[in-house]
Image (tube, rainbow, N blue to C red):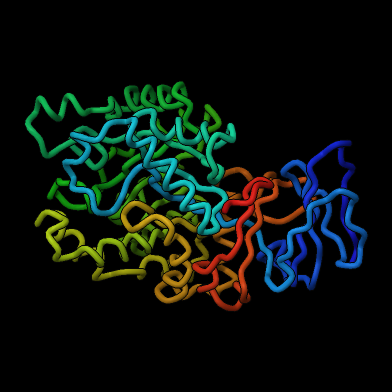
Length: 415
């Protein structure tokens, strides 16, 4: 095995991680025993086990395990939780959401997810969590943050279910009508520091509206959002359940369809034609199924829950067959944080994906969607030391992604 290495600065912190086998790229065969050298948070060498360990390096023994790239969850909500009533937003402060987010970020990292894309948080709370972790104040994953999603008035993502004056008091100024105002909302999100734009292109399952899961934004509004975001160098993630909303969002050029529950042949054809990524979030269905009939959801929501459960995974299976690119995402907060790895088994069971394809979706695939392939997604010299360890073979057993034993995020062990 050829050693790969780069020069390291003097007086750097160096770690040597011994591995029983290494998956450097989920799309390629695994390598045998190796030692990964990490210096100041970056991979500086992937050596034969017999290669000399740099003087002064701290040795971490994972020689009985398989090392692989840290996992990526492209759809989380770190500030939320699955058992809170819908009216909780009327009493929970943004400061408390920050505390929730930091706690859930650590739980998520310990589960093996060294990068997440947070697609919806309260006002500035998500940015505070992202920045605190990036500055090293708290342990957690790398966060690609959307902030508050952009919605239509009275639609999924807008405040509803209260007296009008309460709705107004809780509103986040995140709604828009018409192409010009929707473009302004994108620019405002960019001004706040958004890394990605999240829109609610269709109705939602857990919102209190009982008007179905069809298209929300007009075609012109979505086209304006996408053009404005792309002009600012930002990608667009579209929450979309109904088939026509999925099709319209794909044609408008969104970068990813989130959920995609009722995607039909025409919607999938549009996704293929526009090279749109699909983030299926099957764990959301696990979360809502676990809570169905337990007085957690209102009757309006329970009706929509039953509709989505009736066709669970069918859209993913059809999308995979059609060649749609799939990125791993779970919709955490609809289920308990830390169970993110269970999505892998759902993708195999309902989507017909192979364990290798699932692992690609959770590493290099998701990294490509998020635009961070130069930083993470594979284990390579020069990239961030986002590394996890499992006992088994995740290329053959997708369930291993729910059994992560050791985690390093950007060169720091998450204990």
